[in-house]
Length: 294
Image 1 (tube, helix red, strand yellow):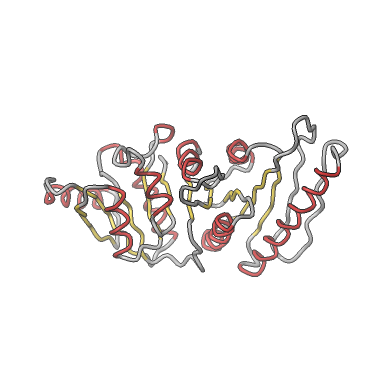
Image 2 (image 1 turned 180 degrees about the horizontal axis):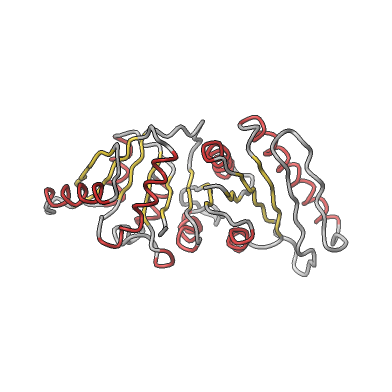
């Protein structure tokens, strides 16, 4: 988590994500790229423009440059306003973490496309994005877009729904079905534990009432032993709905970070089917981090 990418539309949700990314970069010694896109009028030829920041130490960012003349007053004003917003965010980051390096990018394309492109160009190993529940209007940080990015991004995605403060993680919850295909996350869990050495890791399996709970406990213990996970607590939660069980347990133990396994383009573990991923990522109180194969 050395190169952290944060998409922003200057909403409250994206602001929560940006602060979380900067705080996380303090822990990892990483840097943050703040990404914003501009929906330009049809036919605009202002491609390949971008702005770059500098270390967050109060220095002034350079003005936006373009590959050609601006396409009108509207675009000029739009870029000016967005640059002002970006400057404000950079100033806030300087107060939160003066040593963290932050750069900003602006792209004239859809945000989802810009994110996937920036991940490759910036060698991002984590995307931090805001999320909001269902609304009447389509919003980039809506449930459907959040879940889509969780499935398509080639790196882990951290979904943030509320302010995280200093992001001082003391309680981690990893929810899984602990089937054989979950073995790929063992190394990732060790890395997360190294990042937050004081945190307790809860291994959680949500089961129906008819499920053999002793067998579930054995699976959890075997998983922890195989991957040499220390400072662990094992938990089996009964629930008819997986998402509800995860949320209830996370709330009960005051989880600071919820971890979910993924299988790349096939989505989250089959434990998280029928919209469970969307529910957990956008409704659970703590931030949600997807873990991908190492």
